[in-house]
Image (cartoon, rainbow, N blue to C red):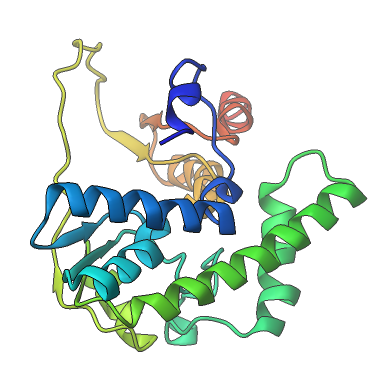
Length: 239
């Protein structure tokens, strides 16, 4: 892979989705996977990354190797996924719903430093992501088995006519951590990515309501995300 050696010597940063969702990537991934399969002669291909689904399907057509795909998110249904709610029967949204509801919602809550140029970029990125989602769904039709990681996820995919063969839950790695000072009394903990998508924005309101009903509670915030400093400031003001 020509991309990895350069990234290996750079401090950690978020890689743009454009890196693995363009025609150059898809062409190269087919050649790379074809070479590896000819060399290794696998009896089955288990695809863990969405970006390898098209390449894996081409390998199936060329070398007759069965394909198993594990889906860990909903990017093949909708780039943002706000539409996948119970009140909508978990159905992926239409183009109009996406452009007039999901994109503005994402821009309001997740984009920092708002400007005309950033909004135009988000529109382009959103259109590109919609195309890639449809592109991946097309190739997903040709895989032999599709696995997801929770029963709820299976229900959402089933609701969108993507047949899930089996559910295999993630195995969480646990590392021994240094002992922390034990918190006394009742502790309310938020654990997760500290963003709007995980509900971190309503944590402060929940803290205020709980303190009105019960005194002496301790609140703990565990995770990372762009709302972390904002929440810390808001929590520090609560008496």
